[in-house]
Amino acid sequence: MGRVMAIDYGHKRVGLAVTDPLQLIATPLTTIHSQELLVYLKAYHEREPLAALVVGMPRTLGNEPTDATSAVVGLIRRLRKEFPQVPVHEIDERFTSRMAHAAMLAGGLGKKDRRDKATVDKVAATIILQSYLESR
Image (cartoon, rainbow, N blue to C red):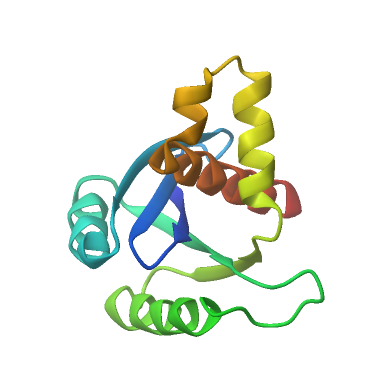
């Protein structure tokens, strides 16, 4: 059984989270520059086969597209083309950044660490992945 990876896509940074091989636990992985995403995913997939990719879909509170939605739709298209054997799932990412801040505060991270956007992106990807795991 392969791992499931979640992607919290942004124009500058991408937060990544991954499951264990049994697909039980979601763990923050890394944050990378958005232009490096496909190269990173290909290298990761060669080392650790991916069973699925989960991409956070940005929506407004009114369930309308945001300015980032079209970029994420394009990313999903590219992922499906580059990784035809790996299912790509979309999941609503509303509130994930807010939930990431709350989780970091509850986890005892200091103010400086909570302001680090790379950390927030990794934690948000983990929340997206955990939501996916719970919805199966």
